[in-house]
Amino acid sequence: QQQVRQSPQSLTVWEGETTILNCSYEDSTFDYFPWYRQFPGKSPALLIAISLVSNKKEDGRFTIFFNKREKKLSLHITDSQPGDSATYFCAARGNTNTGKLTFGDGTVLTVKP
Amino acid sequence: GPKVLQIPSHQIIDMGQMVTLNCDPVSNHLYFYWYKQILGQQMEFLVNFYNGKVMEKSKLFKDQFSVERPDGSYFTLKIQPTALEDSAVYFCASSFSINERLFFGHGTKLSVL
Image 1 (spheres, chains in turn brown, green):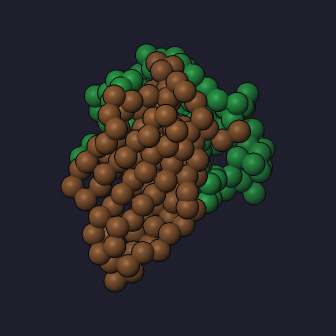
Image 2: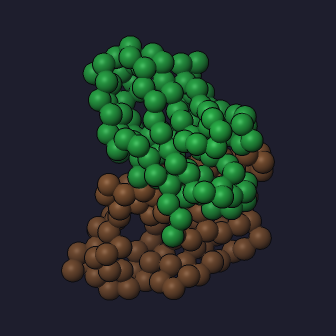
């Protein structure tokens, strides 16, 4: 059973549009949710993260919205740019005190100019 | 920013052989991780390591796998013997503490023939 799910699997938007990436999870012990971005051939890099104490986290063009009751998150990218084209991974960390992250399958985003 | 280096970037070996994947974590980091990513799929946690010991391992961390960091040098993942299903990209990651962000390397692509 997959603990972290992402949708859609892939997405294409036009430059300037708002991108919405979805994530949901099963495990109630998850308390921290980072989003990682991975460009082809590169290492995943932390983009933005949110914890259970917040409903929203904003950093520039990137915003996480968190619905704790439904165990759902979404990452919004406003004014999407071709340089945003990458794979976006939602991850979750539980309170196991080991730092282990559980990743979703990722969403491949393509932004067309 | 801080970098995690992985050596080699690509390794091709015959099934049954031993392979060692090397990771040079961020210099002051104390927690080390290995993740496995099969092409097009999610990154899956293998193991994490702190203070010379394995803290947690997943069911993917088979008996043929071992990790060590002798004398503060490379953090290594050894697979002996290798199997066809071990073909994947292996990502090393490190963090200063359990609650700090993970920094990932570029990955080592392992091809078992």
